[in-house]
Image (cartoon, rainbow, N blue to C red):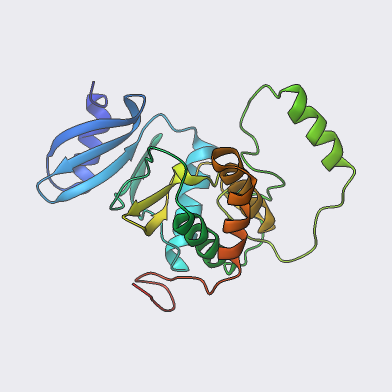
Length: 231
């Protein structure tokens, strides 16, 4: 089922051309991959105003600082249209070691974007903050342990807020960007680094988390629009 007609018409007005095909990227629904004669774009529908403002603010900051991410084409009432990054995010198994190191290195690009909190990019203390979920007993125990620890000092930087392998795009072994910035904000870089290492450990075992950390210690890659490039 394609997006509702008003949303699709709005996207076509932003693109300035008709959409020839649309497919849902998440369980057959939003976000939508849109194809047209002039290329592809991604349409997010049904966005809450606060979530939309956060995502737009994060993508604007990413563009300003050369972070690989989709670029905003237009925003409307609960709607967001962005560019489509090349490649894909699906894996048939755990991420290979080269990808894990590449993601750790790429995180250095985010860590270089120092920002103060704003209404649209609030201070984040943990991944997926603000998203409703029912914690398990193990999660409650972990939160109790963390509550007794001080938050690390250091500058606040742009954080993705939900960083795992499924929110990265790849062409072969080359990272093309970070997607799904719904939980973005500013905070300590350890928020994203810890999230990424946790995902790696769950998917491929504890040694995989060390591969992400190895990448973190390497010089960060950059992309067209950034300060330098290895591409």
